Image (cartoon, rainbow, N blue to C red):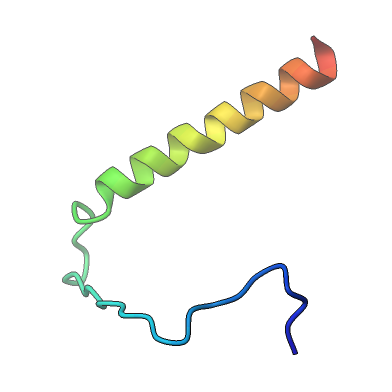
Length: 51
């Protein structure tokens, strides 16, 4: 049953990428971007609460 707010496509192509054990360099760019995004959200929340 779907609420209508979100509909997943019937066919989606995803490619699984497996890194080697202990290899931290493959996700460095994604983790960096994710960290910057979270920091920005925290700054905006602080400004809205205390600004």
